[in-house]
Length: 317
Length: 322
Image (cartoon, each protein chain N blue to C red):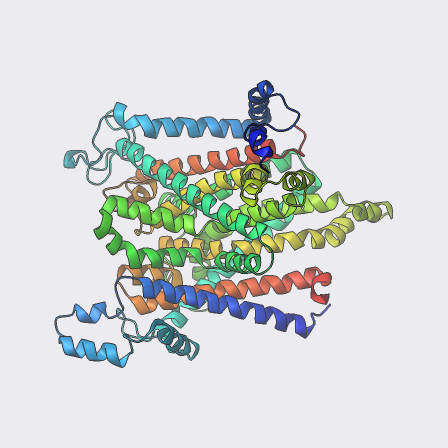
């Protein structure tokens, strides 16, 4: 071992047989290859474009459309779309375009953050279960199956009901509700990822390249991080993409039931909740946020579909 | 074929630990929660502090968590589900009043979903990448990207407000008898059932299509065709049954989502089921009702999972033999 320490730092960083200069090009060509395959899926590409437009709009829109989201103007109550208010106004005369742009930030942020939590947690559980045999694997999988059969929405509502006030007191209303909703939604969506990762681990750990890594003396952590995880990530990326859509729907559902964000944080679901009692006189009020949710979710689902095709090496495209 | 009794028994024995697991999770959430069920009494100025303390002692609120869990579980098993703070009747009575409507709505929406997903999915799989398949594929994508609360509002907007064909508030006290009674019930159930059913149908169609597509390529289907069987017989007798095996698994995984959708739908159309009961109980801080309804939802999920398992055993005889 003492003799190999000199060689190992550099040997660790390059796969055998590949000259160092060639590596950046190879890595780029993998990304290029995925992009080339992704581009074939026209609807996925369109979805990506629409999502990009929505993301840019909610990121920079509030700086361009400089109307305050809580600017109450009773003279302009329930006005249908016009030049002054492109998306119309709500029952307090607040500008809907400004509210939707601002709320979109929260909705998208909740989707991304909840996805990150579910993917990280799911990968962790799946990796532990996949690497350990016997009792640990069995217990973790029983837990995963148990969580899969939980009635998620009732439990979400129960947890929010029980913990809302405490968190609000601890970190303030906005941050508290955000943290709670993200953690709770992410905490109920890690199971499919865990199952996927475990299945990948079970098949990958028997492959020859891993045997070679073991024979070269790679530690368990190194086997997992350098060799198994990168190969297991394909389905996880797809599941993660779909998770963003599911988390956005979950957040809008909670807000729509009146148990998500407070009225001063106009997420798309919350705006819909406020609009639903005015369907007969101001249908546009409900149609705009609903369409935003629908477009975002549809785009993300198509992107996930495109990624599934692009990341599957067995599929010829 | 009939299922062997031991298979059913074994499935029941597997369902029991899950039910226990869910009860532990429920109780843990409640025990970890900052407020306690007696908060309502303590904050009530009409009740002196020592009475509240005595009540706490009487109901064993200061005992260790384990003992409280066992006592709570014992009470739940015996049907003693507590007393609703808001409506002043037993939680179990309240739930039993509301449960039939929920079961009716969920049940008919699942039947609707099945009636759409099976034919469309199988027809699309027999003609992959045809025009029909592409249209169906696009529609399913739209179908499961439309959240139930938005579809519900859209349906109300079109059929209740614009066309004025259907009522948008579900009433349980229809003053009519005979056919008219049935007709009114049918009319008010159309929108909630189709919101839930179409959403499920969208994802199920995808499952059915991809499962049927996998089976159609197998050699035994080619054999069946080369024997000279009619295409209809090949599809209905040879393909469908085997294609349904993975579909049942996926449907079982979706059951919790179905109940989530039911809560939203009941809330939109004001259907007096346990979903809207849960929401109103949460808004009224009615803890016993919240716990009871959540537990009923958990039981329903487990029950339908059990049903899916039994169906699985019927579709795939190899499973029950093991």
